[in-house]
Image 1: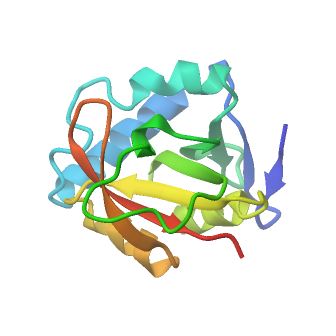
Image 2 (image 1 turned 180 degrees about the horizontal axis):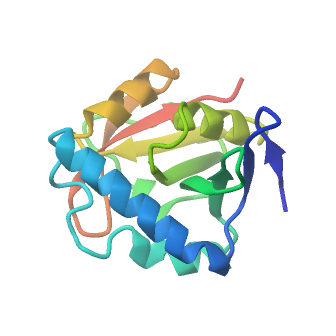
Image 3 (image 1 turned 45 degrees about the vertical axis):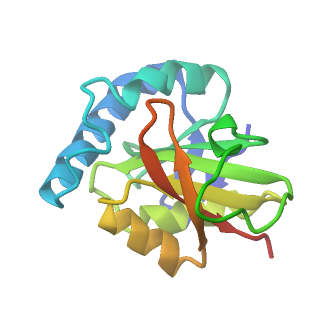
Length: 172
């Protein structure tokens, strides 16, 4: 298991089943923030994205970020390897066919700053390109993705058939 100390006051670790209630709370807080920002469609289903969390924990691809009080303040999924959702892209193409990791379901309860930067610092330790996607109405995430050096590659479709803006960042 990778443990990642961010700045001696934050810890990124694999999520455990005991973290489920905290993760559910974080997803609900993130949904409320998205609605406040005008993004009403991305996580509109009542159980989404929490419905995948137990499976993500089982597969050891769900992570939590603990704050300096050792309370869970954010979560994300990081998967290394082919993502079936990314096998078809329209209106563009991936930058390359290199091995990649995908960031999914990144969310925060708002108690810590710079969550996206912390996640990027963590995933940069892996020798892979990074792919990520977001809903067209998620202006906050689009800004974070684009300001962190990702290149827009086209449109992908998630499990429910809705489109997402797809991005890739090549490893350094």
